[in-house]
Image 1 (spheres, rainbow, N blue to C red):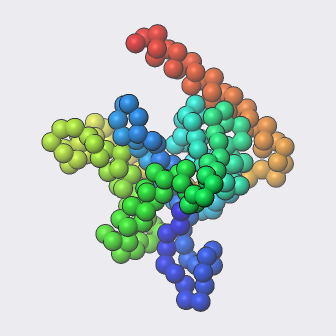
Image 2 (cartoon, rainbow, N blue to C red):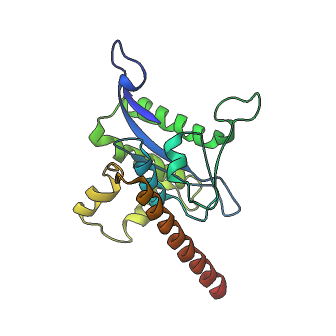
Image 3 (cartoon, rainbow, N blue to C red):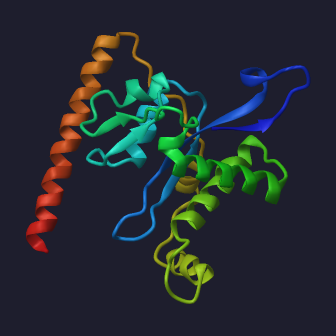
Length: 206
């Protein structure tokens, strides 16, 4: 998605808009799903690859639209599939939940803050994601849930600035596309093996 102000006389990518990468988890037997949104410097395959490695489980069933950089980033993932629009359906029909989160986030930024600068955007997005992911939390309420998480540990300011509130940088670019593909396939194989081993260990201990 894109957020930002329109520029007089320009439309589309000519406007001063900031790209954001969005992943939404579907609701399941364990409860309502979560969402992750990161401010990015571009929408290349490298940026999507970095985002998915940090915020999406490699064994998860991932459905995405037909945007080419996403397909390149998830080319080696075992359960990734492009969500094609059904015959006669509106664009985004297969990704209705993601579009709903995008719409709510856009309304939240524009309606609550009436626009944000690039330096403040990731902080507001993090708050939106936290509220969305904890919308069905039990107990007295969302304020008590947030206070409980804040009391579990202390994060240094440098760590917060470098991870939680920092915008995602551009993806690592490798000019040799063959080497980039091989390195990505190797990372996927290693991540899948680790995830399978972890799942087996949890099943054995449970």
